[in-house]
Length: 581
Image (cartoon, rainbow, N blue to C red; front, side, top):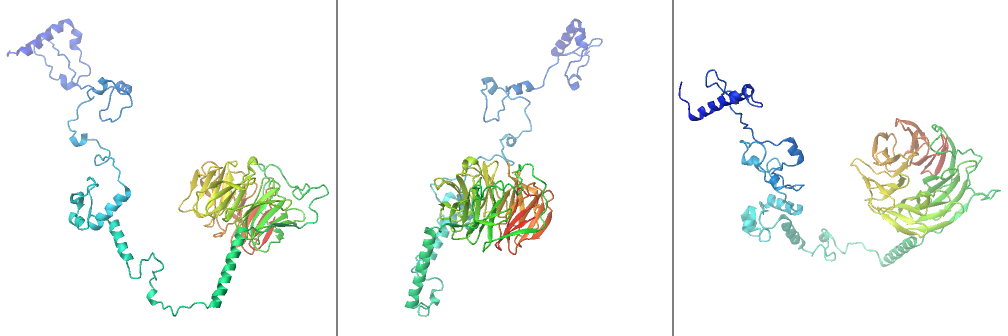
């Protein structure tokens, strides 16, 4: 038997001693031991079984509990959200070392190609240097302090930079402009000395000039025009009213504002409307306006009176039932009246006209109560529908503002100035806590009452101007007449999103603010068009059901009576108001 080394002899004797003491341990295979690690355990002596102590050579690895409790700290962290102990911060890293990890892999990375440090560059300076480099071939070195500029501060064509004294494209352009100004005939900014590009072709002897008499006549005409325009702007038109019926009061002392009880007006709740039907024929024509009718409004709640305003500068009040007479004419505007609006009770109404005045009228007596103006043209006007805010109204103006007035003081109390074009419509939504406005800037904005910053702004590239907007009877939808010959439906609650399934087409309205309306039971949508036709769509299917030739000119407004199942009132630029059933 060959000689054994001293170490091997010690191992053999250790195995022999332990064999007698713990027989079961000798024959038991060690747990969690790799088969390759025990392959070398061979019997060194015949007839005796030996075993070696199992050594755990695996590296120390972080257990799940340590990671969850936060005892392990990632050395690459730049910020720690708790107070670690010294042992935690300076403990060795868990796990084996990656032998294939290069220095490049170990470096911190925040992008695909490596690590980019955050830096701020002024947009104008960057664009200036970029254009200078692409034009002249040189630019300032961003890594050099620009306060001490020298030839070494430039990159690229350094010789060119020295030649141009480091001028950028903007500085060079300014110098060329100065040279251009020094032209024959003086500086272009001095109008007196600059005769223009055609100066050398003009002979003063051949220029036609008016004679002394003609000049005197021209001056008189100009002075008259200026005086007339000035007087018109300074002084509002005189207000007066004409009563067209014999007796203003009946035998019980009730005026025409009293709702008639013998015509069968159904004043039940709008929540349970009767089923509506399509109107088929014309049953009455109200004629009295000499020019086109701009807008019509039904008396609040009952709808037994009709108010109309026209381009003939007049406002008229009509009966809807019985004889359907013209009751009263309100005269007080010097130019066309664009919009009118009742208060909640119908006892007063506002009118907005192109003479830049808003006027408050008494519906019963015809008296003008007060006037309001801010020297701009009002395009639309609305009372606040809340009962406790009936003294406040808003008007959309031609100068892009929505102006809020207090009737009691006659002063402006708020201005909503965010639109970029003239304001066309104002519609109150969400139980009168908010209102929606549309403008010539092709946008729709939603405002909280008395807060002059819009909290919702809707403007898509595909959108057109929407000069007429109507709220549905259930208060859930806004019907907007779009200038691309469509009626768009927006949700009137919460998000004000466009309902793409409800788009009504088939009529021509481009260029006209044709008013839209709903039937009381939400079955139909009605609108006039540029051809004078009354169009009726089905609400559910958006199908164009019916088209009636209503007016000779533009049919600007269509109203479905709130308490009638099939009565629609239309008005047009032919000066007529018609009732359909």
